[in-house]
Image (cartoon, rainbow, N blue to C red; front, side, top):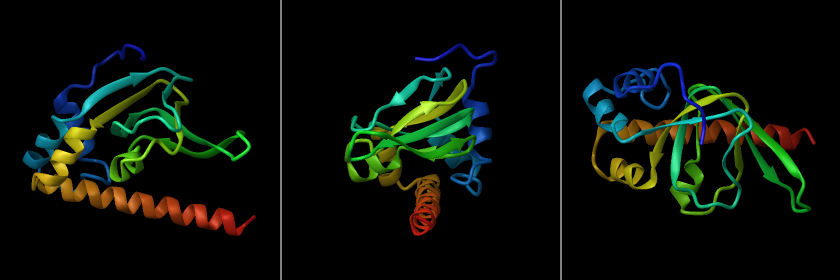
Length: 158
C-alpha cells in the first residue's frame, strides 16, 4: 500500500494532530496519548482503494492529510458516489460498531495519510474507561448524525 511521505508521521505529531480533530479536541493530552499510541499510520496513493464494499471492517480511520471518496453500489451494480472526505474526517465506524461488512468502497483522491485504529484497539478503548474513548464515540455519533441529515435532505430533493 501507498507511498513514502517526505516527513513520516511520528507518534508525537499524530497526537498533536488528533487533538485538533472533532473527535479528540477536548481530551487531555495524557488520555489522548494513550489512544494515539494505538493508531497505525497508513499512506496510500491517489486512486488506491483502501477497502471495498462488502469486505470485513477491521479498522476505523481518520484522514490526517489527503482525501477519500466513499462509493457504493446500486441494486443494479452501478457505482454510486456517496461522499468526499478530507482532513479530520473519520470513516469506517459502521463496520466496527455493528460488526457488519463494509457499506462502501473507500478510494484515495490524492496521496493520503491516514490514522488507522484496528478493531481490537477500538474495542479496548471503548471498554477501557479512557476519557478519550467517550469523546471518540461522541465524535463518531455526531459525524454519523450529520451524514444522516445530509442524506435525508438529498433524498427529499429527489
